[in-house]
Image 1 (spheres, rainbow, N blue to C red):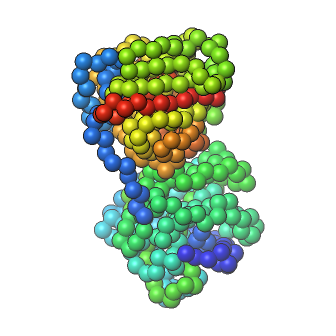
Image 2: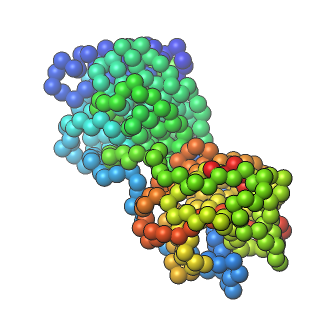
Length: 443
């Protein structure tokens, strides 16, 4: 990996090149510091959510995944790199070579401790940028690449980098002085090796900087040093190897960011479960028990069905956080989460995470389930017999799920505009072995 002593040198080079290019009318070339394929849990053999009722006659067949309207805003700019209509810099000298061909922006850096960045012919300040990056040649320990944002001037900006050896970092430059915001961190979400593509999503807006790689949230920080300034793509080389380093960019999409649910309506419901002051539905019947025990709301389920419990307060628009702990059950057999806009046993939204690290959002329309966000894996979810903090937002058309402070689902859907809130548990154990979930700290 590029070592830490290079950070200041690389940022200094960034600023030097920015100063040089700022004197021309050409898009800027800048230098910035650099800073395994994730193993997915096995696919469910059964339908992820059984019936849209507590006592189904048979398991339903899931409907095809529907395309939700994302909460990330309108597309402001995109480039498939079929030509250079957006005036990206094309360079060829002894240090750097760049060209556009076959749907990619190809960059090679030939010298050590060198780099470049590329800015198109538009200026956008707040960004939600997604771009595919491929390490094409060189030593994976000698290159870093990513996105610069809020470039105020050649000495002041933010940077987000990943390496093909599987690490990432966030930094800022203040008057040419580097400050590391998130130090080098390894992640299995970053695919390693030559010829391997990683999708980067970088959000710089509303005082926040976020990095997702291949859909997995890796870093999120709050910093208000810069709130304006444009963006660029960038590649740098270190001093580990003198051979050329190559990176290509493709399928760039820039959206207008949508502020996350910082001002969503609070539910007015809080519960430490010391008693049943909120009048939750508590019951015991064949295969299921819902009770308040040891200052927790506990659900024990012994058959493959979805069960829920409702508080005495009816809530339509909500922003609710709660802890959920798996107490019993084989890994991959326990699902839990929340329902919102529950109208009856056949019509509602359900957020569900599974103890093997998967999560999804479904809606039931007249008893027919449709995937809004089909089950995916996230490293943000603690697996096995562990506790996860869930935040569920149902506000207007916004449907959002955060797990352990990481945003996993941010979509819009207007199927249901009213209905109530429920906590849910789901067993996936074919043998009927019991699973147990405990809910706590709801607010």
